Length: 353
Image 1 (cartoon, rainbow, N blue to C red):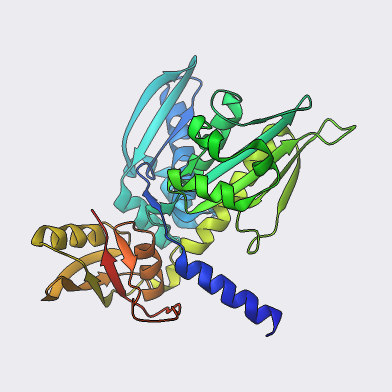
Image 2: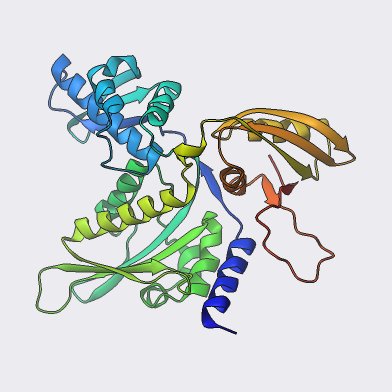
């Protein structure tokens, strides 16, 4: 069989069997910045910067904000603000600005930008650093500034990440050598504890006779992803990695703005709904998804319910959104000897609230 055909089949099988562990991101419409003072002019400028950071979270883009609608919104920044507050952190004055979700999403659509929903896959990042010929995991205890940098950079994109605790449970499952060498099986098994959909191993070190740092990283499913390498400042290479991971991840899940103008009606079937309470919980979970406008129960037989969903995305985007929701699991026919990935499968099992 042709090698490319084998590769495509392998990718399809991986995508079909992968259980998505999505996190409902709560702070997409707010952000915090450091300010020099609490004057009105400083607050206005910080609020403009805050809106651009929120747009980055919602669109998966960091620098495509030249559209006239966005420039106009910056001049009318108070129209989009919900609230703001000052607080102190480690001797610095910070301002947290929260924006009205409906108005910001309308701005995204007006500017023709993609929209990324609030359910996003969890990324586990296992990083080992070699410093002064000693190797250790990057954790809150060993390298708190680097660990904080990972979280802060990911937060700018609204991407949920976890740096493993490396407590007794983790260290009994994964060694430094296994992360350094990207031994996928052990790392992926240990990552189930954190309900991660994607898993990254990374090694940070200084090549001989240089003051620069080198960061080698890749996803543990190395058959699908090529290793990446960055060289430069210690903190900057980590920022570059998180930026790349976040922007490429967004490209997979954002909703095409050119196909969200009309309202579509799609019927899905959800089985294993054992009570009226389960039916209502499932309906509410569907209603809470981005681009879903309304959900109606149109048929029920025993534990199976058909829902009619009105949404402003394509059916493919709707499937991606449901696929990220932990409460719904794609239906797998137990009688089928071979399981074939089917893009048209709109039947799910309810697996929890």
